[in-house]
Image (cartoon, rainbow, N blue to C red):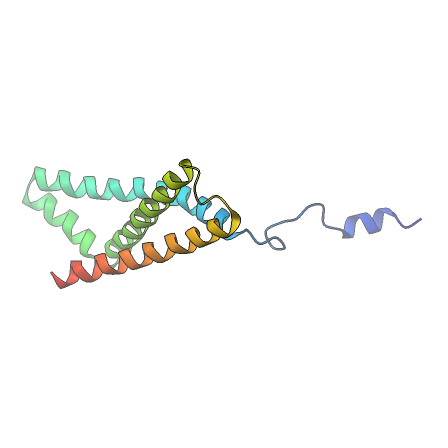
Length: 132
């Protein structure tokens, strides 16, 4: 009898994230959803800034002060990165809707392209923001 209760308890019941590595296209798909949520939160920060500008100088100074703080800059950097990633990955999904780029090698290539383009666009946006 090789199937004893003790032997059954030692085997994993199913693959889990510590053993199974998600493929890059799956990670970019999950990241697309996460960045959508991040865009919502970041947009609320921008709406607060705009409303504060309409309310008056004191409210605007408070909102601008928070956004210019280290925490605010980190949030804005994350929002910018999420915006660019979501934008480029959305273009990839539009291409897929046209039934193009659906093979596995093309999916990996487009995933790498989306990640690279999002990183590049985020860096360029912040370099330009601080240069101007």
